[in-house]
Image 1 (tube, one colour):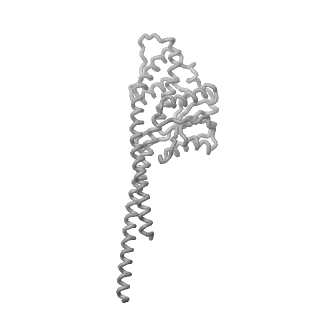
Image 2 (image 1 turned 90 degrees about the vertical axis):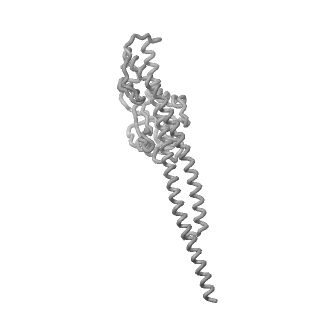
Image 3 (image 1 turned 180 degrees about the horizontal axis):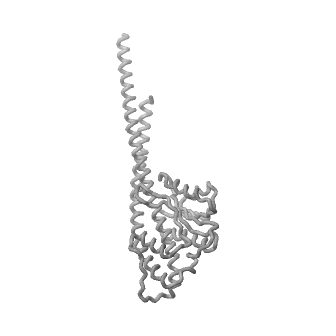
Length: 290
């Protein structure tokens, strides 16, 4: 049995760990709430964009747009959204399993240090590595989306897809893969945009409108905004998933530390009682020998 001094040191160490994990749990909970609020705030913007796309699409021939042109897929382009830090349970590991399942040639743009480290270890083709802060500024996410769109238009990749942890609830973050380009059908894209914003089905506005400089120019400007918005939405989703996973992991660590402290306290009391009993026996034996 360990000495009482060693057990006291272990109890003190575990208490310090519990205090740290509790603080990290509270910080992650606060960040998760803020990330959810930001995601909800963007629904009105998504709803308005769905209305505009649905309206202008009826006035142009969408089939000739580069974003809707179908072509043979030789190299996939994938945006991988991971975390910069660890201590978030199996969140990143589940995303990496999706990457390992990709057998076709693929090029990656990564958000998050963990993703770039994984791709370097597995020797996959990394085009660019981006850092996005916890507040998720739109300008930082826009640079990622525009980079991959440029690769798509130049022919370096034949698709643009995104892998991210989809936020279901506090306990469930589902690793997901979503194709972004080329768009299979604009109507489906608009309906999905409306579904994500929890609005009714998109209906084109058939009133007479004058588009400046032209309906095609407006359409060409809206589609890149749509892609930027999609990537931004999923990065916000990933941040909420990260903070939620970290909060759950830290709560589990805190509960385990509490359980370990109880076990060590019991062990300490037993060791102290055994020590006291031993001293009494030694005193009694000394008196008897006299």
